[in-house]
Length: 117
Image (cartoon, rainbow, N blue to C red; front, side):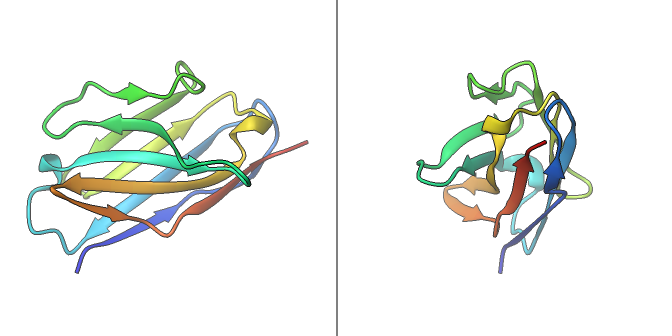
């Protein structure tokens, strides 16, 4: 049974940084063979893609609102995907979800990120 466990969310002031982690377990294939991504959902808004790393590829894709501020990375040995978030803004406040996909999609439970003074 595939499980994704996120951590690293919390309250941070505008301009601050956070690093989210997502550890996968129960995978049937190598972690590198999954497309890994982070999504977020703010209250009253639809879930949106924040960042994505395609399978077997280090060329990341980012949502327009986070380009230049967020960085997604993967450690295949630790089966972990990270999201480094810098220069955070109040508009980044949302629940952040880890997602992996290899024909079948899996989601984490979400971690709250709140950016407020």
